[in-house]
Image (cartoon, rainbow, N blue to C red; front, side, top):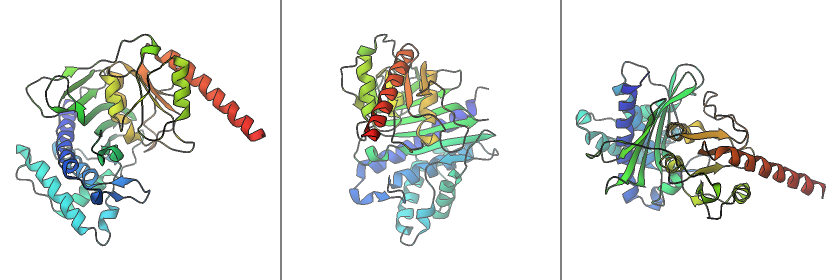
Length: 345
């Protein structure tokens, strides 16, 4: 299948959501940042972006039912004192939709917005079609005016077949404007175009062809440094410090050849959500890259809203991956021996 209709709908939805998030980021105050029950930050852009994408997908793909696995839900928007916040989100959504001619007469109520956000309660799985969404991936970077992504993917019978990702802060090489829209369909390659939708046609992207790992650029999350990342880099002979980037923009950097290695090893017990990787993974894979766990197995997006994988996610080129996985194994073994030694002391 070519997924042309789905891709067109996803590109329109993500572009409009990116427009909304850009407007919010420009005027965001620290007082506009709220905390969810898990203490992670959330803004009007997270909720507004999810509402826009939910509404556009439902309308563009009608009468197909919409099953959406997404990060946000409207629970906190139903609490006392949330009405003013919900009203501001509703205005943002209607403004973003009005910027597209086909939605110029579409005005949503606050209740419509709540329902659109709550479309994101699907649990995914190995049967049927599920859209996977992170409406603002990298909220911590977003609130600082830094990199973030709007990431959407389509899961069909447990396999990711399509990905669209807006990177509003990422420089566009083919245009003077900032902002890139990456997209890929299974077997169809990966492409990037300006987020502004200017006259430049989409350009095919390809991962780097660097053969020597010592020359590779490696990226990691912008949170605290992870010791095993340094160990792996040292074994590969990488001398340059890592690039620390928020969100799935790291996948975009690899897909277009700006970096060669992305390592993501997390604290023990942390479970990865599928919306943090689905869109980026297919875009990088279709650009010729490899996305796997620390054992070299492909990521499995069919087990619900979490990934079930062995420790660590490794992303690189086909050329470099064998040497990286060898360095990963050695570093993990050393880390295990160190832990055992410390327990005996």
